[in-house]
Image 1: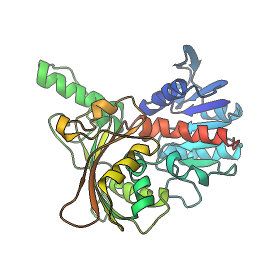
Image 2: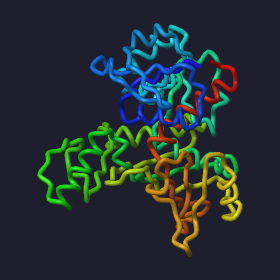
Image 3: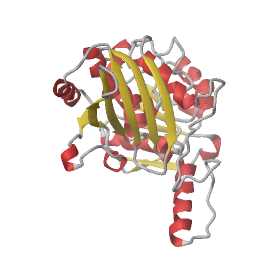
Image 4: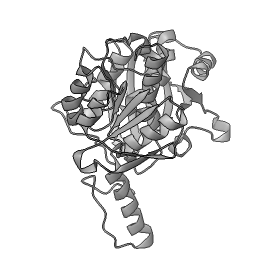
Length: 335
């Protein structure tokens, strides 16, 4: 299959190429695409170098699938042009997620909504993906009423500039380095936490927080689920972590609930307090699964659970989920 990766030179685009190779996606021809300033540069895929091409040249090459990770503005401008040419777009930005005419897909949950007519498919927000993968089997059994989630998100979610800021601040703090480094955030991130991801909205929440609210309802096909979120950037690499408090319609047996999670596709339970075993970003790094631990009742009210959810935000939170969508489309003969 001929595949274009739009934004191939970026942090997520590079991860897309890695995941396509690791999962042995049947790429017969790779078309790496980036901004005009990157045209002519080379990217490596399965031991071979490919030259980056322009958007126009990529459309002319007629790939079956184009995986976008180049920002919302680029997606709004170019995804429709790819779609008009008959190319199926899987878009990693927020541009199309809440468009009622565009499917928002996590394959473990709602890939069944996809049809051959869907030419622009939205990949959800990284923090939303890992939470709903863990919650979906529980919703089916017990019925979710309300979710309270607080996130602890890796700097990789911001991009290369944020990674460089963290490394620069660490080098200055630990080694006394005087090298300059970029500032992706208004404040230092090393030895700090920043309770803001994306811009603030009129209701006092950030865009990231409202993404978790709105996307969860759309993916799980249940707009009665109430969600409230606080999203926080922390000085870690490797993945996002979430403290999730879930109120169910029905009561649950903890042993049964653990079993449901253990059997859920894409979920690994790591939960042994006696051995101090629980998911951490350093353990989720470069893995595709969603890790769940600290599973316990909320003793302050009935039918309520606390759990801790961790996943690599560049993989399941972005690249892997997009490639899984492409795998589903191919497997069903939709592309």
